[in-house]
Length: 302
Image (cartoon, rainbow, N blue to C red):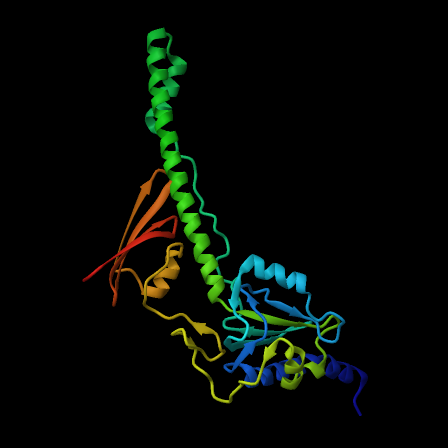
C-alpha cells in the first residue's frame, strides 16, 4: 500500500512524464513528413493560433494582421515538411518548414548603429585657443577655421547617414526575404493546459483538420525541394553556396559561403566598413559590409 507522500510524488511526476512520452510519440509520427496547409501561413514564429473545442477556434482578424505584418511564407495547398513538434504547458507547437522566422538567433531588427563624427584634435585645440585669444583678428581667423572644420564634420555625418540608410534598407529587405523562407507553425492552445487526450497523433490531426491536409503523410521522410536537408530533429540546414543577398549579416554570409579568404577593415567617419573576399564555385565574391551589413558585392572569375 502506497503511503500518502509516495502517492503524492507519483501523481506529481506522472504529468510531466506523460507529456514527455507523448511528445516523443508525436515527434516520431509527424516530424519529417509532408502535409499541405489549407490556408496561407504568416512568415513569423507566432504562426497561427488554434483553440480546439471553442466557438471560435481561429481568430481570423488576428490571423489577417499577422499575414499583413509578416507576409506569406507558406501558400495554401503548398506541400511543406513538419519540422518540429513541441509540447508545452498550454499548447502544442506544430512547426512547418522551419517553424517561422523570429525564433532565438534570428535577426529581427533593421537598425544599424552609428555615432556622430567626433571632433578632430585640431578642432579641440582651436576651441581651447579661442578661449585664450585676445587679438580680434586672431579670434576671427580661429572662428573661420572652426566653421570650416564643423562643416567638414557635418558633411561626413551626412555621408554616414546615407550609408546607414542604405544598409538599413538592405537589412529590411533581407529580413523580409528570410521571413518568406522561414516557414510557420500552428499553435494548438488549451486554456487550462494540454489534456492527456490531446497528446495523440489522431487528436492533433483532428484539431488541425480544418486547416491542414494530412492526406499526403507518408512513412518515408521527404527531402525538401529547396536544396536544404532535414536534420535529425527535422530542422532545416542552410544550403551552402550560391550568391548572397544585400542586407545579410556578415555571419550569415560566412555561414553560406564559408570563412572569408581575406578581410580588410577601415573607418569611414564613425562607421566601420569591412571588405571580405570569398572563394566560391561561382567565382571570387567581394562583399562590402557597413557595420556588419552587406550593402554591395561583386563576383569575378578566379
